[in-house]
Length: 344
Image (cartoon, rainbow, N blue to C red; front, side):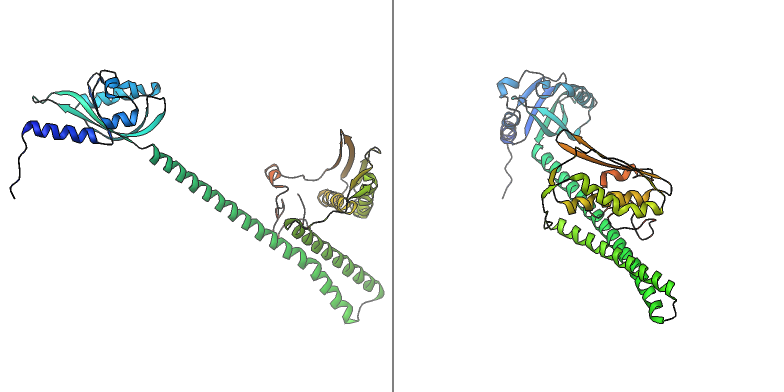
């Protein structure tokens, strides 16, 4: 089949039809940036009709803060250089900004002189939005993975600590029980062995109780027995329980208890447990001959209990994690102080 040649005017008409039917914005302009042609794709993308755009400066669709780009584009065109897939932002008739990809080429006349520029602009707003969303999802997934990995690491540290804390009193029980079974101990050593076994068993019982409390809290099954109580009386019983430990380290105790701090409603056993943990930590981390101060005061409708000490304190970088589950400031099996639910 013979190829049919198109006449020049037919070729021009065909090219014009192709340009006009393109979904991309195809625009021509002079070297001064004045629009000379505007296809239907440009009308669709930018919102201006051909009658509104032709004869206007191309800055009609360029946001004010990007006007400098036009001078740079025209400089390239005057040198006969083509700009391929330049991603930028343009402005529509209704004031919206859209992301576009620009390809700008020099327009050359029959004598080889550059007389203007033609540009093809493709709206890539949806593509950019999809890219941003994809990046956001990737970042969210990476953050979730980091959090999960950190949670797994913290839980592993916690389990290592639990194993270590459970083994310590168990070793004492097994060791002293073995010596007792040998039958070679005198009465004084036997009494010491019984005391050590009792103390170790009580320590292990406390650890198991703490673990059960953590489990109940996590599963939402911790029950509170709320009833009227005198808060100072509950606090004083926790203080008295820790006096032998304070005396053993020769720690001075200062108490400033507001008698007006009560009565109130609460669970006395759980409050006593909270106070005991706070005071126990204070004793644990306060050096010999140090000082612990316990203050109670009413603030508006609230009652504040403040336990302060002269110990090492909590490192500033750990403070945001004090109440995180499974976190301890001094964690791992090589830590200096014992205990399962320590806060410092």
